[in-house]
Image 1 (cartoon, one colour):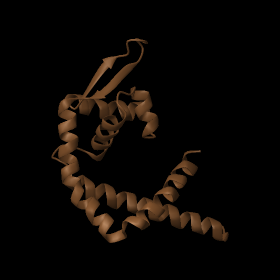
Image 2: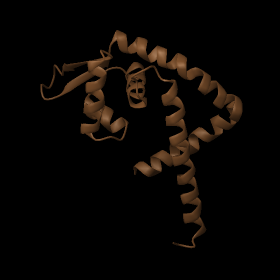
Image 3: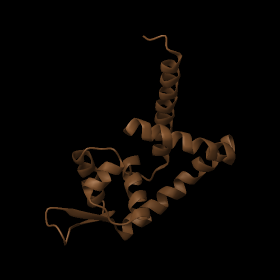
Image 4: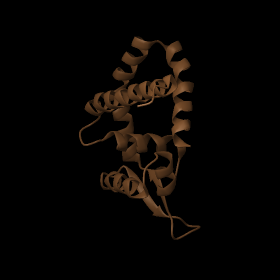
Length: 145
């Protein structure tokens, strides 16, 4: 391994982010309504805030393959949480939107997650979170390039 301190710093950052990711997923997953996975909640939340998207757009947004996104979308469609329709402008594409049942499921999930979010804010403080967000966004951007 390199003795370069910058490499050690980057490895330390990556290790902390990966560990935090595992803790977040585990903690939040336990709070979600029965049968809902974090990936389901994430897609419902995204569609709720952004409106209709193609499966390819969703896959790009979540840094997933189209196959992985298709699998998640099938589960959400089977649960009645989303609608998938043909794209009226291009029959080769589909459009995905959140259904009324999906909005209700998202709201129920949010109600279950709020105590965890409140705990995080109480433990870290709003100011520290606001300072950290740009750093994490920059890190995510750097990894994506």
